[in-house]
Image (cartoon, helix red, strand yellow):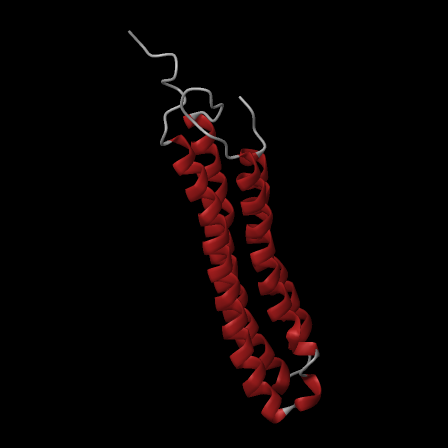
Length: 163
């Protein structure tokens, strides 16, 4: 005979916590890589053209936004995690939804951070030599940032879903 608490096992919140952690860890890794890679490009470019430093900070700002996506989803998930088992209301289904949400924003943020870092590095170095490349660099950075935004949208849909 099935137990009344089969859909609320004690290990259910583990998946929610892993989703929360995944959201922050992977998106922060992507943001850190994007910042570091773009930062080396800015440092190399500033030797040739120091007047372009402030204009070249854009990739670093865009990489930092990726971490904010993970923070938002991680906070939403953390606020919904409850006690499981008898008397609890956190079902295994919710744990899997939250794990999917965290992985969605985290891994897409990691990919976006990698793209922003590579484009930012090459873009600011190229802009130092040919200023007309700046607009093209910004457009490519926007397309890279949108990858993280797609993950955020899916994560918000998953994390706010109720039965």
